[in-house]
Length: 277
Picture 1 (spheres, one colour):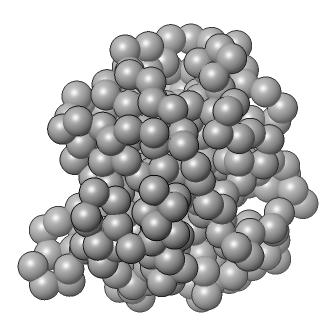
Picture 2 (cartoon, helix red, strand yellow):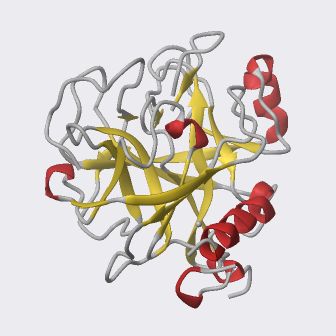
């Protein structure tokens, strides 16, 4: 997540193995020892979070630099060999310089997987209106438990969970995956709060705790991580951590890529990566 405008910051090849892209969508019926700060203006934080337990988010992955293993973005397994993350996580990296880590809430105990290919949203630009990327691994993760994709951007979301390898307050990075609950913020309210910096309700959604003094939010380098909701008792990937303002200043909404709003384009990218096998 990079600085932009009012200190806005980036928070940080149809189916693999015979799995149709539609099967990745939910039905409406039915880790890291303390390290130096990553490069550039990227930090790692889940403000106001709690430690995650092993197995709590089995689809959670870290995007790390191959040169030193340091975490800089999150992501979600949507198939055993596919990861959905933020497009801006590839602004300064490539399949050769980025690796995927998975398998533990402790980043230092995760296993490393190489990237074969990836597709960034075709309309991606630095304004982050279309901020997603699908990543294909060179091999599937055995025993993977992918998270289904939300089928649509609903207008009656309630509470979400967000997760990432972060910090508490202004301290250093945590060795353990952290998570927090963040309530839904309507498009109308978010347009008023964040629209002056470029909120686009057609492709984005908002969540966060807005009470004065609250410090509960996704923050820089939680980018690409999951915003999770429940539909019919099943946890789904509703959003992708994209951008926001200073997590510890005035309570502002976190802005997320809406998975449901861009589900067709994401499915096309999944199909393309699978056809390239």
